[in-house]
Every structure is written in structure tokens, then in C-alpha cells.
Image 1 (cartoon, helix red, strand yellow):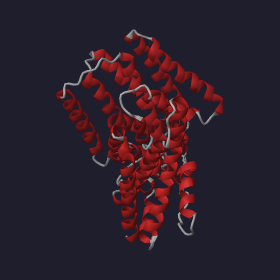
Image 2 (cartoon, rainbow, N blue to C red):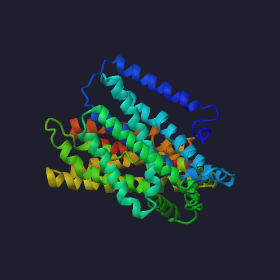
Image 3 (cartoon, rainbow, N blue to C red):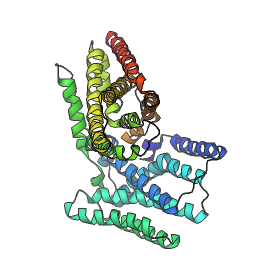
Image 4 (spheres, rainbow, N blue to C red):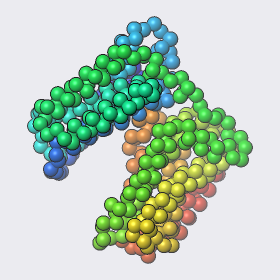
Length: 399
């Protein structure tokens, strides 16, 4: 299991540690210092590890990796802890350590605080594994909610670090006791490996595939729902800035919807079918662009409505900015996915956290900053975006 996640020679472990070292040295050399309360460090370590571990266990690639593994004779507890430890190591080395390294670089911590932060990260991984085995039994769901709420309440209320460390150790022990009793098959979900659709014939089948892709993968739909919540709350946060027109920044932030922008990367079979069949490039990319544009505009519309209710002033210029951002984000995302799909990933976490996900939102933030400082440039930029979209789509169509 570890070689599936880290590579045959565990090369991803070395890359992860080198990335942490580079990040720490870079931030330290920049002399960036912040005052951070210890409970914020513990909260970040726990939340990051829990979320990433859950995503790793829920990955659809698990079924493909485990299909042959579960055909061999195995000891139940050994299999369970092999799976949990492998994914916990992947979560810690490739994801959580980067977060903790950033915290360690910008603030001075004692050795005890750093050790407790690492303990919180380990506890988050094991809690996620224990919760993953419990949520499938509805009678245990209230216990999961109480457990999770209790941990986060203790993070905010317990100020004595040694007492908090004992609580975290008890939670870790409780997770281990739960995992001792579960059947290893709870981590194997063969249905997740089945493709949604393999044919792209017909006028509407590509859009149908994308809709089924979004609604079948609950994690992807949850990400879009989360952006809708952010769209409602964001005007309250950005509206407190009075010196600049920061409204366009919200449109750029809401374009960070990774799951809908990795359709080809996460399904190599679909990519192969689209690239092999004649005339598919134009048909697929145009519909894919419309799909991303529709999702972006749905979220941006909530942002516009929320802004107008709270602050007013959402007129034609703001609607044009929303259209420009949603369309530009859709075209750039499709172009990146068609020209530079992500390869050699192990589980979906590698796709969701790939650095490429920040390229388009960063460009959108720069454009939003320009339109915020120079509102009269919105119309000009919209014309540029439309011309750029037409040119890119024409290139894709000819290919």
C-alpha cells in the first residue's frame, strides 16, 4: 500500500521532505513573523489531517488498488492497520507537514508545542479512519458527531498543553480500539471504481456525462455547495474594505472549484476516447467550457445577490465582471486540462492539491485587482476575454 502511494522507491517521501525544507528556509529567509495562538496550530493540524485523510480513504482509486489485494489471504487486523498507516503516512508526509512547516516558520514554538501539533496530526488521521468505518452504521453517527465536536471544543477551551496532549492521546487510543474491531472490507468500495459513462455520442451526452460526474461524486458536489456558502458570506467580509473596489476579488476566489476542472485528468479512459475519436476535441471542449462557465456563474450569481442585499450597487458593471471572470476561468481551465492534464497521480488528493489548481485563480485575482482599481477597464477587458475565448476555442476546434 505504501509503495502504491509513495512510489516503488518511496521517492515521494524524499520529495515531500525536501519541499518542507525549501518552504521552511524560504519563509525563514524572508523574515516573516506572526503571533499565532497555540490552539490555532493544533486546530490546523487536526483539521487538515482529518479532511485529507478522509478524502484519501474515499478516493475512487482505492477500489482499483485494493481489488487484487483483497483476493489474497490476509489477517483482518493486519490488513486494517496496514491500510490506515499507509494512508496516514501519505497524509502526514505529503500534505500535513507542509502546513505545519509553514506554521513553524512564521512563529517561534517550544518543542512541546511542536510535538503536540504532530500528535494532533496523527490523531486527525486515525480519527478520520475510525469515523470512516462508523458513518456507514447510522446508529453510530451521533457518536461520531459528539466525538468530533468534543475534540474541537477541547482545542478552543483547554489552555494547559499537557492536559490537552492527554486528551489527544485518549482520542488516538479510542480510534485504535475502534479500528481493532472493524472488518478490513469496510475500506473496499468496488462500486467507486465503475465509470459513469464511456460514450460521447449524441448532441447532449457530453453535458449529461458532466452532470452525472458532478452529482455522482458527492465530494465534488460538496465542494460546489461549500463555494455557494462562501459566496453568501464573502460580501460581509469584503464589504468591510472601503478604500478599494474589492467586489471583483470575490469572483476570482469563487473560481477555485478544482473538482469540475480535472475531468480529463481524473478519468484517463475518457481522455483517451475523446482524443482518439475524430472531431471530439472541439465538441468536447466547447461543451466542457459551457459546463464550467455555468457552474461558475451559478456561484457568482449567489455572490452578486448577497452583495446587493448587504451593500447594494450590483449593477451592469458588476454583472459584466462576473461574466468576464466566469468565462475566462472556464476557458483557461479547459485549455489547461486539454493541453496539460495531470499525470501519474495515485489518488484524487494528488489532483485536488496539485499546484496547477492555483494558476487560473491567480490570473483571475490579478485581473480582478486591475478592474477593482480601474472600473472603467471592465468593458475593455470583457472584449479582450471574448476575443481570447473565441481564438482559443477556434484553435481547439481545428485540432
